Image (cartoon, rainbow, N blue to C red):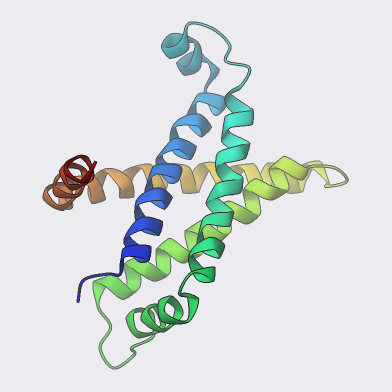
Amino acid sequence: MRPSKIRRWVHDWYAALAIALLITGFLITYPELRSAILGRYGFYMPEIHNWAGGFFIALPIIGAFFRGKENWAHLRRRMFNLKKIQWRQIHLSGTWIAGITFAISGFILWWERGIPLFALDAMFAIHLWLAWLFLFATLYHLIAARKAIFARIVGYFKKG
């Protein structure tokens, strides 16, 4: 079954935001890399990362607003069919858990007021660990789905 247009739209923009967050997050975390690539400090990098993180949180909410009932029904069918556990269920569940964990830890790191230092350190460690895991998962996904990704990109340009 082909995903609806709104699900494809949310997936594509979510993927673009996630990759932007990955790039900006690593550039923030590793200043040597940032200065080697940008040739300067890059004062706006944290701001770009924060805005992208806000959209990362808002996008599924927007997707739920448009045809939310249909999207949730589709998600329930794909994630909670316990009669036959498949790789897609594990992948989708992991994506949701990682996305929620990224959002919570990122929000705590952004907020930081009144939060004990040990908790901020723990959130940073979780955020960074997930970023490395996400980097490898993204590389695998891009390689495994390269034909479909290329076809979708070409399709965008043909429509325009």
